[in-house]
Length: 400
Ligand code: IFM
Image 1 (cartoon, rainbow, N blue to C red):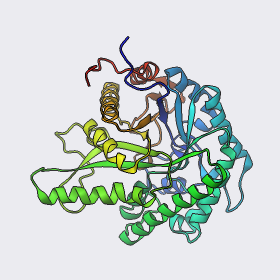
Image 2 (tube, helix red, strand yellow):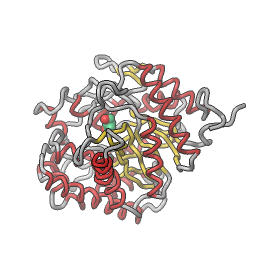
Image 3 (tube, rainbow, N blue to C red):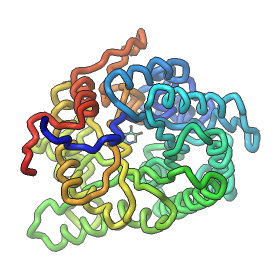
């Protein structure tokens, strides 16, 4: 039989986040933002994953996946400052244990964009005591997860939160201020460093990292020195600065990769692909080569890489199948070049609440009927599951 393309034990899984799937998260900043019209749809009951998680994890396992990335909802666990709800901590511990019982490795994110309302009312990330508040929450969460989860992601996509919430103002808290954006970015470095220090001191066996959204910035015209310089500046500011600032405080690197972004000037890149480029229904360019470049770039940080997100919004499931195959092939190339990748989590397990875009984008390998909550596995999910089960890509060239 042909040799495996991915090693035994490679973490093939899928990802979700609390607010996007749980439903009824009415104690956080996003809930208010949605009701004020900030999102195309309110999150409402989402995928009712809060109650349905045992079935959803069993479904993930039945596809052949061996890992599940999900997140804790801080606003449920700490509904008022300093008051920890032990039943909620127990809920998430049970989620991690439900994974374990089915031989699924849980990968648990502690913060995935949402904040408890009480913290957002005091200034959110920029509240004077936010670092201490966050680190205390993380320490309590890690205590609850002891013996149940090993892989812990402290913060999901800190620089996306900075850009969307503090520079572009299209997510909570709706600020459009470069000064606030710089302050928020620096604060989120402190959040991670302090959370790392507290968790690592109490649970030295836990493996900690952040999920870093990495954009492959490229000059629109290769011959343009200005555009090349612009791409380097963006790469430094969005990608590398944060990772360098937290150096030494992670055991793995979480990579969220979606696309290449073309830069035409010295300032901001074009967020959307041009019409003649292959793109997703979010308007993001499709670029497996960019994924390979991102994986290579992360070698700078000298730790194993766990792809914590990669996926496509597509109503045409054939496009999702092709995206998965092309990106797994690019990842395999990078691994052959010596990039130490230990796992890949497809975004997302379920069609879910896509923040300001509401429910229109469909990222799931499992479709969710919004009326009945019925789950339907897509063909792309079965295809991905078969790769996960066998550790082999279909028709891979054995020479490469
Ligand atoms: O849905 C988001 C997720 O919450 C963070 N990473 C990107 C995904 C797709 O936009």
